Image (cartoon, rainbow over all chains, first blue to last red):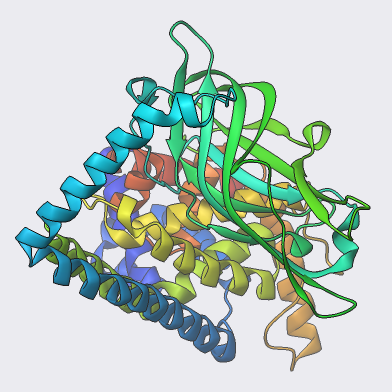
Length: 289
Length: 175
């Protein structure tokens, strides 16, 4: 089949898609009718086999969900806007605030070795942090959260707020990739067993990684038995696991970070910790051809 | 970019996405249905594709890639995830096929058998040929849009389409 015929066949498929008939197309190209007819018949048969009209109820419900999600996003932005606009409209005020913050920071970091002599986990050197990758539905890296069965049965809901995710890459010097999840609040009670929730998908630089940090800003649980709301404290604002994995450009690496909540036995308290044996990465071949 | 400009840009993308819902929802459902063989799941996944697009709007840059083609790409990724979750590519059997119009038992049986026959023939195409057929016949996309999704020139898509249709014809009518 030549290029010209391919174009004609392509045009006829478009016309069938628009609701025209095989005969309409054959009438336009009578010189190719003999060759075209059986091929268009195949197109027609295939479309007929899979023809169906989606349920109007499902369509309407989907549209409602989409509009509600748009409204929620707009509402969030509106809530943020007045404060920033009000503040930025007062240059003297923000200049003063910036000076106060600067002085406070200098004072704090200057005195910190004296005030807090205990060694803490070093934060990644900002010069070694790769600029945050943006979410991208076709990206090569997917980050998921799951929950290993444990004391989760005590909770009606257990919402973990994740503010940031950090991946530490191997090599000299060590590099960091940090990104903000698209979904920041996950309810662990909904993610038990094999269930996992995707919270970010995007492109991550290729390479070998060996540590994954999640920065948790808040953990709020509602106890099933009493309905009481409890806040679970973490020793620091981040949880980390060390597990090597590879990210490549031609495959999608899916990293599942499994969290577990355990009863401490003291004062009916709970702690949240990563479950290393359930966490890790696996790769799927790229979806691109 | 100034906050006002960014906000206006985002709003215009949201409006475009909402408008595309009315135009492309049915096509995306059919495209998904042809790949997973389940009406209800196809409708759910199509809705999910639009929500996912909304939450990833920041990453969408037109640059010759229309938003509706981007939606199909998102839908494709959701299908891959779905099939991975269900652990295997759906094998459509006569018993499990559901037909929307359940009024004529004979017609139902015929359509069910036709779908099984077609699914089996589609499975014998190359993955790229199958993708072209799914995007063109069921998604109703043009060859140009299918090419954007598959990262191929429209001429290459047309060539693959012709080869796929000829192959399907042989497979469907050889017995």
